[in-house]
Length: 93
Ligand SMILES: [Zn+2]
Image (tube, rainbow, N blue to C red):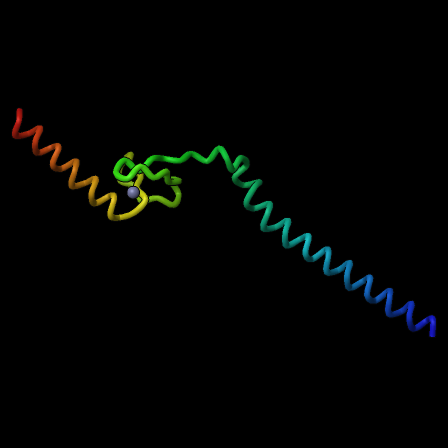
């Protein structure tokens, strides 16, 4: 009887240990990929959207030359603005 209980406890402990190791591996793999590849998460360079002023990361933004935008809408707006500016400059000169 006591043998049975001990057996059950040992199995429980082993299962828990395996669960813990698996959980640790899972956390390590997801956490490590986020921190070690990036190194310093706070050092990620943010670029300001010149249209709406939102700060965007270069990887998730819409790039247009040296400018980065939060959305297609801002990029289109920026393009129309720069085109207007260029036209005014051309006609003014
Ligand atoms: Zn924007």
